[in-house]
Image (cartoon, rainbow over all chains, first blue to last red; front, side):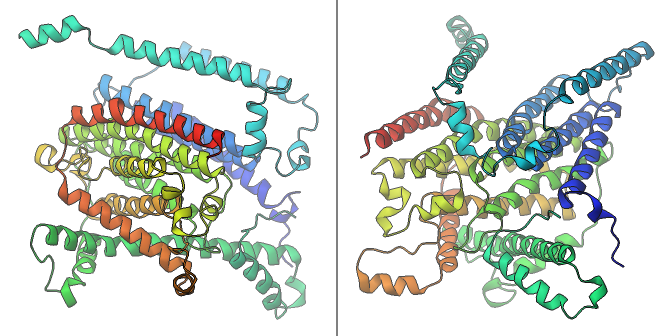
Length: 190
Length: 373
């Protein structure tokens, strides 16, 4: 009597959600490279990132999902949009690609898919790993203890190295961008 | 079959109720799966309706309040004619705005033009779903509340940038770029203050942050950590004002310079959505301040049993809304009292004052916790 169709997925709601999200990711990704306007493609890129974050969320990797939104939507893509707004001549001419470039892109993406499938498929428990892991396996607390732990399993040293590297980048950016004293004096004399 | 569930006393009540109603259905369509799916859908609808009522319902109240506060600050009366003390004025204005014709300026990017107001509305709605209004009144009691709030705040900047650019207007674009730069800068100190709260309360879940403040008024985070809590509260107040683009930091709109900023070309419903987002952000930021510093839904007990018993008789949700509206009143008084700084002064203030102070505050808070004071 009651149609058995959506309920025949082994995990019901989660499976349906996965296929919907995967479809949206594909659509936005295709739109991102297919639209002519560069700002529109940046917006589709954002939607693609957000749906990827939802995919992570479905796999219970909540912190990665939030980090994805925080870093890409809040940071990277905003700066991409800023750069586009400040530099390119929007609306004057839509950029077009020549044929060989399309073939190169096609070949590259096929190769990428091949490598990814080759790397991911041999993973043991690919289908059951997420379901069978304990409930708080990826909670913020466990994640933080692992990331900042100083036992052999922890990642405290890479974490510190990366943070020092980022600090260096920040200071370098400020040094490049700041006005020197001579510039300020020159402006004042004018 | 796995069906996501809304973990929540009201959700439990619905899950309990649905199988009992389902018994009256013909036996052939009864099943466990159907019951759980229906219960989930009903719960989801209840959550959505609750968020919409709090958000859309409070916007007219806030607009009325803003007009009255503004008028009394300037020694005027404000709206007085429509209804008792002009209470119907906002409703009339909302209806007028919704019935206006919606059109885009010529040469505008139509897709982006109509997408921008929608994107701006994402962040306030998501944040509102995380706020605990009472012990049992929270839509999404997620473990990573604070990171989620910081993450979705980025959508506001994006919506403003897109709206400003797609209007095909110089003033809009200038306003959008200015406000984008402002919001990105102040987001950093906003996140730092929330980090301070996470550090002292030891949790990223808004419910447990609130539960950590149970007790008297001196257990609220603003007073519990001497001096530091109060400084953090003031810094949160400043950075959230800038984050919301409200005066004195309304560089984005600055009507004297930019004829209205990023929403110059908007009219009718899209304009109403920008306006709505602004006022919902006011509610959610006040709610965040209340949750993180002012004890959430706990009454301001003072340690004297007779007084506390009376205060505890008032439901938590009433205290919560009282605190929210107190915070809103503070934001409004600031808006109509202070003058607007220049763009460069605004940026200097963030990067040369707020951010260093925030970093010092974080270190001081860490020292406070490590020494166990």
